[in-house]
Structure formats: C-alpha cells, structure tokens
Image 1 (tube, rainbow, N blue to C red):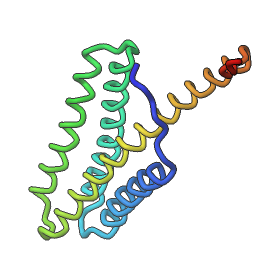
Image 2: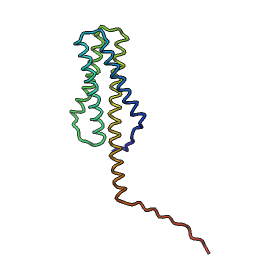
Image 3: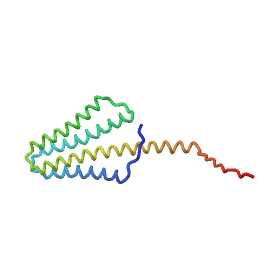
Image 4: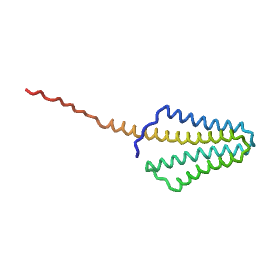
Length: 157
C-alpha cells in the first residue's frame, strides 16, 4: 500500500466547492435553457450518469492500487461508462439547438463536475486511509511505551 497523506482542509473545501459550483451551474443552466422537458431530462440524466461513472472508475482504480479485489470486467465497464457519458453529452450538444456559448458552458460545467467528483472521492479515500493508519498508530503506541535511553560521556580522571 502506498503511504497515505491526509488532504489539507483547504484542498478538501476547494474540491467540494468545485463540485457544488460545477453541478449547480450545470443544473441552473439546464433549468434556464430554452429546450423541451425531455431534452432537459436527457442532460440531467447524463450528468448523474457521468458523476456515478467517474466515482465508480476512481474507486475501482484505487481498490486495485490498494490490493482490494475487483474484477477486470467492472474496471472495463466503469471506463466504458465514463466514455459513454462524455460521448452522449458531446452528441447531445452537437445536435442541440443552442448557441455555441451555451454548448461550451454545458461542456465546461460537466467537465468541472466530473473532475471535482473524482477529487472529492479521492479526498474521502485518502482521509479514511489516513484515519485508519492514525488509529492503528495510536492504538499501538498505547500498548507499548517508548523508552529513550540517554547516556552521557564519563569524565576522565
């Protein structure tokens, strides 16, 4: 297992803020977009599918790195889901009757959201791993005392 460092509080807050801003902007833009309700449902579903797929892929990759068993089929399925979510958004935006600036807005909000979801998931795993190691170290230090022996040089007569 790799050494685990707890992410700083500022990085955890920034990651969560990026996720909230990305998803919030995407959904506010979707709410205000001049499209039919079924189109809005399509883009809403793509966002949820994308978030789930990147979290699933990140978890699977992290499990493999830590030696937690997971099947190759699930890893491939998670990767295909991520690519599918991105492709479905791209196909939808290419065919949407939106201004180019609106299409770019949705693409950027989607990208920010996926990246932030991966980062938040990584922070959760890193924090949990750090806490797990910290509790193990705390428990072992309670069981054994650390004795430090100090010697001083003897004066010559």
